[in-house]
Amino acid sequence: MSNNYFWPSSQGWLLILESDSSNFFLLNPMTMQRIELPPLVLSSPLDIAEYKLVLSSSPADQDFVVMLVNLCEDSIRFYHMGHDWILYEYGSMLQENDYITGVVSSNGIFYGCTFQSNIFLIECVPCPQLTLVDGKDYKYRSTWFLLFL
Picture: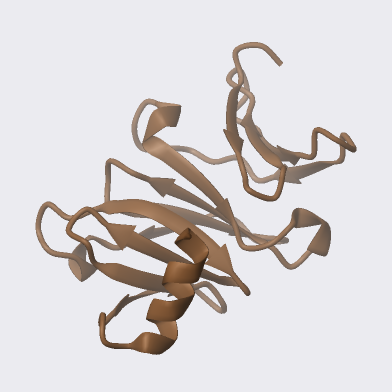
C-alpha cells in the first residue's frame, strides 16, 4: 500500500486512493473489511492536505454517505452506497473568500463551519443541499456545539 493516499475517519475506517489506478475504497484496518467505491477523477492534482473525509455513519451500516470536502475550493464530493460520486459546488451559497474549514456528522446530517464563521448543514438525501444556519436557530446551534466539544 505504499504510494497510496489515506484519509482517516472518526468511525475508524480509512478512505484509500490507489495512486496507480485511481481506485477508491474504504478499509476497516481492525477487521480488514474493504468496501469498493467508484473511481473518482479530481479536477486538480491531488494534495491530500486539501481534502477532509467525513462519513455519515459507519460503513458497516450500508446506509452511509462519504463526504470528501475540498478545503481549498468550493466543492464537495459525495458517495452514497450503490451510486456514483456527486460533485456539489457550494460557492454561490457563501460570501466571497469564504470556504469550509470543518465538518462533522450526526444522525445522517453533516454540520460545518466556514472561515468567516458561518454555520451550515448539509442533508444528502435525495441529493446534497447546503443550508446556512442562522446563529439564532438554537435547534441546530445546540447540536453544533455538542458535536465540536
